[in-house]
Image (tube, rainbow, N blue to C red):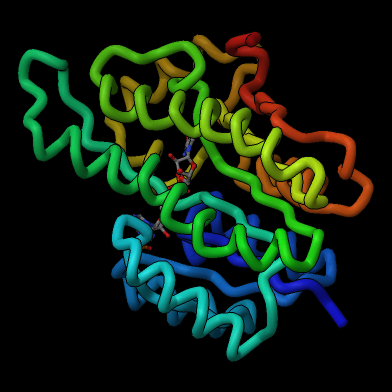
Length: 240
Ligand code: NDP
């Protein structure tokens, strides 16, 4: 029987590529999303992958959503924490709401999801948790104190949990993308985008599929000796 994988924010952007790549690798995939029903319906029509709507920022909604997926598809073996948002602002103008929204989704959301699959993974002595952090969590980025804090937090969370999961057959890892051609990056003005690209040694944005391939590897049985790690996929822009 194929393993069940949940991808949060799995119906658009990097998450959609991860969902498709996992399906192609033989997993039964459930793609969570927050509110964009149109994109989710289009995604399901094109890929046949079921979508489930709830906010990862809501603990009880995560619990209920995961229970529904397990009832529909079976026990969750793989969790990909991909859902993320930005609310950029220089710190002197950043509002408490901008701080909270980003922390709630990008860091607490990772707790909410992982906490609700952890017990089952421990019982079954197998699990794969992969969280999508960011180059800006590794190096820090002006205008993103909230996002950089959350994404750095994801890396610390992963390193701690990797130690707890090791004896239970659960690996916990991070993929830290650089700038990838998705809605999030294409939304910035073209001039800013050109300046971003000029700072990437390979001379281009990354493709969502390039992140998906890292995730599929970390989710595989073959990656069982890799835990607590961060794979940086950033075109040579930052080494850590
Ligand atoms: P997109 O904005 O293209 O897609 C974001 C996805 O996350 C959507 O499916 C969205 O759902 C979902 N989402 C947002 N908030 C929530 C929530 N509260 N609960 C559930 N789902 C939610 O983002 P990207 O594909 O660009 O980014 C994916 C991940 O990669 C993020 O964690 C991001 O921080 C990270 N990243 C992206 C980089 C890039 O260059 N693009 C670089 C480094 C990291 P809906 O469709 O309903 O809105």
